[in-house]
Image (cartoon, rainbow, N blue to C red):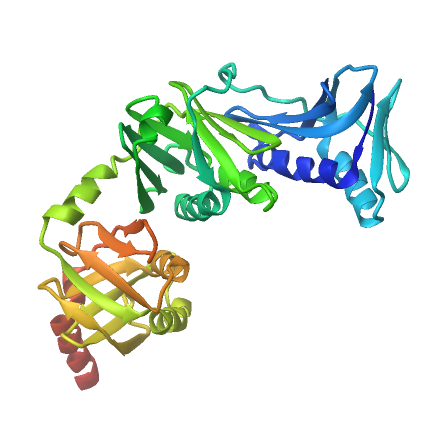
Amino acid sequence: MQATFNTADFFNALQSVKPALNLKGKAYLNDCVTIEAAKDSILITTENDDSRIVSRVPAEVTAPESIESLNYQALDSAAKSAKSAKVADATLSTDYDVIFQGAATQKIENAKHGSRPMRKQVESFPQNCLEVDRAELLRVAERMAFCAGDASHDGLSCIQLDFSDSRLLMSALNGHQCYSLTLQGEQYGAFSPGGNATLPRPDQFAQWVRAIPKSEKTIRLSATEDHFFAASQNSVYTSVFSPYNAIDISNFMVRREREAKSSVTFSRSGLVAILKTLLPSVTNDDRSIVFNFDDCKCSIMTHNRRASAEMPCEFYGDVNIIAFPLKNLLQIVENTTGDFVTLEFTNNVGPCFIGDGWRGVYVIMPMKILQSWHPDNCEAEDRQSQAA
């Protein structure tokens, strides 16, 4: 094969396929790139057990043949050097060796590890699809990836898709917190494979959306019974739906609408500042903070009682004490928008809802408060300590 292409186009394509290689753990070790010739272009492919990403680069191609098992890092380094040197066009050719001709002539070695094909054969892109704004999808994907965390627990770090004729409920969760978003519209009926599905590795999907150039305004989404598809102008992301069944977030949403709630509203910047000052006082073994609400004031104390603070608030309801994992709450509040943040909860052991000022809602689960911690008991213990 010999292919000549625009250096920037090739570099951008490499960035868009990179997320399928960003997997942790020896079970998913994979740094292999395959390049195939197509009509007036080349196709760059990476894949792992769950997903495949294919990106197209316009090119002049002679002797069309596939080049398999190329080392991604070597190829990326060569493309980056050519782009930095402002070389307009580059050439990839193979005879006995694979050579990248850009800012310099570089030999590209084969990958040390072979590719890991997807668990299920990829289906063709369905005819029915949903067109979404790239910037809007990126906003959703990044919130989903943040709440789902890493892929250390496949059954927990995922996106739940709940399809119906005119609604798509997307929920990302990691076992303690989640972000849920409901999209309405008649077009979702054509997009839906029906029922529920679990999309693994939300962080990988967010990375792919982030790598799509801003000039590409629209991304097409579709799904079949087994696969999820997302396509930009020059790149296609395909993932196998996970066999795991995660928590049914719709039950939480029903509780939010139907049950009586207590609520408290803070200045978002003020709450972030106080949580950051309390952060050094918590430990991995005792990581929660306790809120004690009054009508217009809130006392905040670490569960280990090492640090405390007060701040104004607007409180309504009868649940006046509740605890949360400090780091999780801080991350959520930092990711919300607007000048104020409101927490809604039905009791101090059920889900707490935090609107993000946009379309979705964060859900965080409270932590258990020991009976001995209750403020009245704390005061009694303090008096005993002082007397001693």
